[in-house]
Amino acid sequence: MNKSELIELLAQKSGVSLHQSEEIVTLVINKMRDTMAHGGRIEIRGFGSFVVKEYEAYQGRNPKTGETISVPPKKLPFFKVGKELKERIDSMDNQAA
Image (cartoon, rainbow, N blue to C red):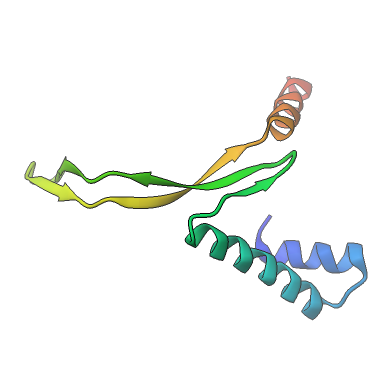
């Protein structure tokens, strides 16, 4: 599912216009992005959580030249799947087998 499909589904299920639905989805995504940009954590029960992981600087290697390079510290978003979602996906695999 992509953003436009989510907007259409929200409009259908809630009875609001596509424009209002787009504003709602955009608001939620922007708030999630801003929260993570400020180091916050987002937890959606039954789905999972989004956190920002910090990685220290380290000495890496350029794969083309083999030259040692300095990799600066960085922060990356990380999604940890929730128990209920994990179980639901696993049960879907077992049904298909």
